[in-house]
Amino acid sequence: MAIKLKSPWEIERMREAGALLTEVVEEVGRHVEPGITTKELDRIAYEAIKRRKAKPAFLGLYGFPATLCTSVNEVVVHGIPSDEPLKEGDILSVDVGLIYGGFAADMARTFPVGRVSPEAERLIRDTEEAFWEGFKYLRPGYRTGDVGHAVQTFLEARGYGVVREFVGHGVGREIHEDPKLPNFGKPGTGPKIRPGMTLALEPMVTLRPAPVVILEDGWTASAGKGNLAAHYENTVLVTEEGPELLTGKPLVRAR
Image 1 (tube, one colour):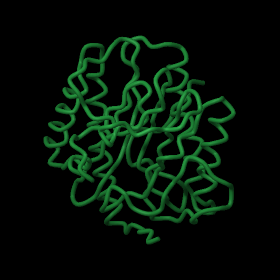
Image 2: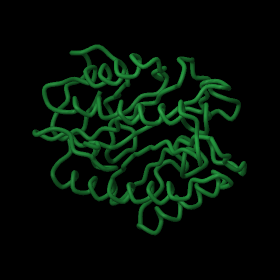
Image 3: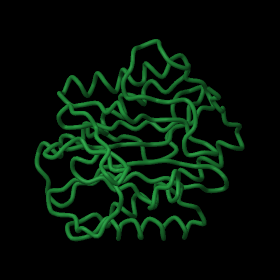
Image 4: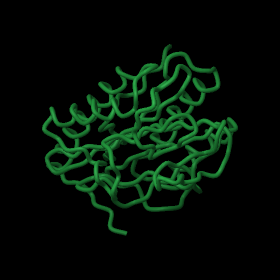
């Protein structure tokens, strides 16, 4: 395992990439509504990335055919954009990466499509909350198992399924680098968290525990009809003082 610690110059480039990707995801999110197709959202993302003089990180990666992974309802990850319109009550997970100045950033959000059920709302909210539980441990003195354990225990206490088939990862000059960052684990195990690491922490959660199955297209990862899945991801820098978001925005709780 070759974990790449980033220099101050590399960190600045990754901050730039992360800021641009945050803008792209916000732009895509503003267009999520009943009637739009995921293929149209993919076009919006592609054009938004190109306007920022960046490159889609997923397009062509391992042969993936699109800029966005668009995963609807029971699909956990790697859904391929299609011409099927989104419907009121769906939930849509959007996963996207870009490369800017030779460095990658990676980010995912799950959006409600119009009004959704209370259980879907709760799943989306708790998946984000699980990210912040793991985020607390992305600091020197902990290990990747501490991060995964925090995510896992938060979610399993609420009855959700923690996806084990896919995990978070390092990010840098490549969209996928060492180390792996699972959403489950044992405290005190795994590689040490060190300053200069840049990591994609990404809880992937199912409403009911279920195995994930890859569909015939070779990409779409489904938790089974009638289930729901959510995904929340940011690229994070580890500093001496603790974790710094490179994508997204800090959590603000109402007092």
